[in-house]
Length: 296
Image 1 (tube, helix red, strand yellow):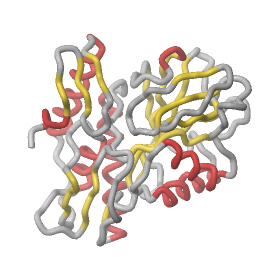
Image 2 (cartoon, rainbow, N blue to C red; image 1 turned 90 degrees about the vertical axis):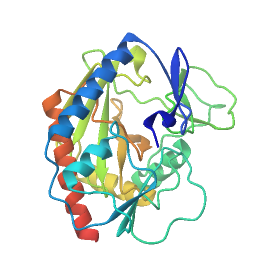
Image 3 (cartoon, rainbow, N blue to C red; image 1 turned 90 degrees about the horizontal axis):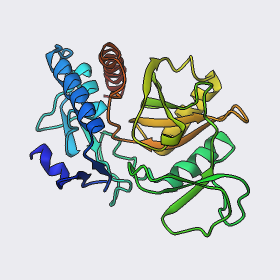
Image 4 (tube, rainbow, N blue to C red; image 1 turned 180 degrees about the vertical axis):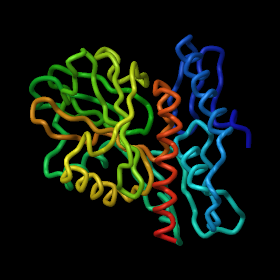
């Protein structure tokens, strides 16, 4: 199946069929496409890892080259085959219908990444929450849709009526001294965090799919041991074997908040320097390889 079948095209934008997210054609998009193609070319020039003795199938489809898992699988030595020891479930859908699959899977049991389910699971693990009642809210708060990948959040400053399909959460103060907001994008491998992408963007673009700067660092530089244990427990509760967590640290109380879960995160981030793109994919590939050896 052609990669073009993943999208609906028009003269001014492209829409991702599975999530409904729409991307408008701009010069910034052209720059990002060039960055992405440059990374894909460099990754294809690298020798992949020695193949694992593991037969893998993808359901419903294999990740395209613009997804972080694509490069990680190459560096893990994972190749697709007909018969399978492991099924990798790769879908952008927020809810996966039907019963969970049988057999050994990667993300096959992760069926719901809606914002409300993420918030409920987060509160159960961490003991404090994000969700608020918009009709009795005081101060600023956040409204956003349930669906994966739509980037439709907005800030409210007065009470409002709750709408079906929308979630309402406290507004986390993650501003930096430089006047940007800072997100911790944490790729996870069976709950472990092999690395962290520090993503910064202007405050007025805090909900856009745009980063003015991205840096690569370690989980230990960002989180305490207890926080990493809680993150792992959260992934276990979400049944998330591979994915990306968006985590914010609130300046007011110093605590972390997991605000989003993505099973099919794109990457590595386009604003990340090339050497760090390649290094991060290698690190994730080695972590995935080690984890797959342990479970098969």
